[in-house]
Length: 349
Image (spheres, rainbow, N blue to C red):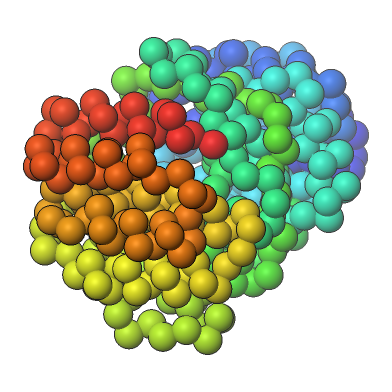
C-alpha cells in the first residue's frame, strides 16, 4: 500500500455479511488504485468480520478495526479521524461501486473545485430500479437541500480536512448526512454531483424499518426548518411565519395555514431564478398535491402561483389537484400511496 493515499474509502459495517463481499470487491476492482480502504466492524454478530478479515489478508490497502457496537455516526467519525487521504469516499456494505467511480469523482472534484461530490445512483435488488438523477450545480444542490438531502450518502466523496473539522453530529442520528450538508452550506462548501451513475444502490427488507423511518422524517423536518431559517435570513427575508409554512411537510398536520405557505413560497420564488426557481416550483407542486384533501381552494391557490412563477403547463396539474381534493385522498390512504409512488417516480430527477 502506498504511504500517501489520495483517497480514503470508508466502509462502516454492522451485520452486513449478506452483501458485504460484493461491496468490498467493487472497491478493490476500481480503475483508480491510489487509495486506502478503511473498514470498521461495529460489533457485528454475523459473518461480517470473517468476510473482512479474508479480504484484509489479500489486499494491503485494507485497514481493518473490530470492536463493540457504537453506532454509525461514531464509526464514521472514527474512520475519518483514521484517514490519511486528501478525500474521503463513503461506501455502504450493501451497495456496489461501478469500476470508474473513484476515478470519475476525483476527476470531477479537481475539475469543479468542489468540496463534496456525489453522483447519480441506480436502485437495484427490488422492483424499483430507477436511476436517481441528482442535480449537478452548486446552486441547484443548495436549493434541493431545502426539501431533502441532495446526495446519495454512500456515493459521496468529500474533502478530508473539512470532514475532520465538521464531524457528523449524533444529535441527528438517522439524518446525520442531511445535517452535515446544511452545516456545509453554512460554512461555504461548494457542492456538485457527477451526472452519471457511479453507484448501484441496493434496496432490500433489511433497511430502515417503519419506526426508524418515522424518526428519520422527524429529524429531517427539524433540519429543514433550520436550513429554511438560515436561507431566509441570508436573503434578508422575514422568518416570522416559517413555522406555519413548514407544517406542509408534516403529514400529520390537518389544519395547515395555506396563506403562510403561499406567502413563503411566493417570496422564495420571487428571490430565485432559472434552475433554482424551477426546483422550488416542482416541490411546491408536489406538496400542494399531497395536502389537497384538506384545502378546498387548492386549485386556485396553485393556479395563482403558477401564473406568476410556473412553467406554463397547468392543466394536468390542476386536474391532479382537483382529483386529490374532491376524492379527499389523504396521507396513509392506499390510493394516496399508489398515486404518490407514480408521481414521485415520474418526477424523479
